[in-house]
Image (cartoon, rainbow, N blue to C red; front, side):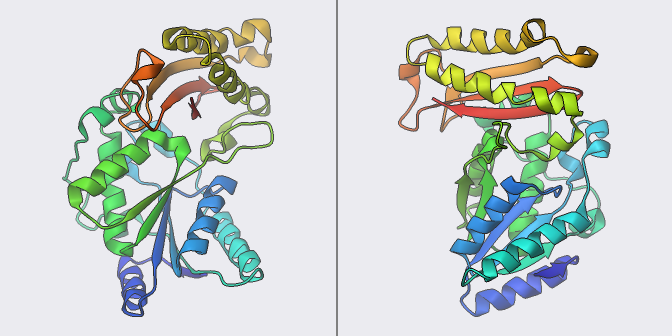
Length: 301
């Protein structure tokens, strides 16, 4: 693994790789790595000659300053995880060369806060979009910057951030970069909770309670076989909102569902009937507050 902090050094490294005809994969992260991130890196290493893993907490995608301040930063541990993964995969045969990119804010945005703004139409007008104004434009700005610096052939994103994948797909269409977007399955803990950097902010009691989100979504997928869309949506929201009444929790812990939407898997537009979903099917997307932490997850119908 090579640790790079300067944008110019990253550009130089990938330029040399491309001149040698090597394939480059990019795994953008905000650090605080977990097994979900490592699964993206491992897949990228299996499909490319060089893999750039970026670790950068992007301030312009946070519309909540408190969330930005509380976002976990564990660069030392992250680099150790990446190096350990490289050593393990290297012992199993051919593995890609890893570049860990950890820029400062000034390095990413040398001219100060970027002025460009991206719009994604209907894709950003649902779910996260209205609740986090400016978030997806901020994501697009940093992802395009990473695309420009890393010059990848493929970019890897996890499906937990399902709407983000649709936004990046739209971004690629707008900027016309020949980059393959690779959407990777969610990695879950043994109890079903979708792995997330924010999980480390949960208290032990909240962490024990959190798997009920996925359990509820799995039951919703079963209900979809015989219930209408609106009935499934209502059941999910009611089940989580009343969870603490059926299962009393310490310290008054309770789920506070923000939304649960059933949408077309490609367009992300809400559907009122299962038959309205296109060839990619339907997806249920949820955001839930627990213990002051906002958790998101999805279920495929």
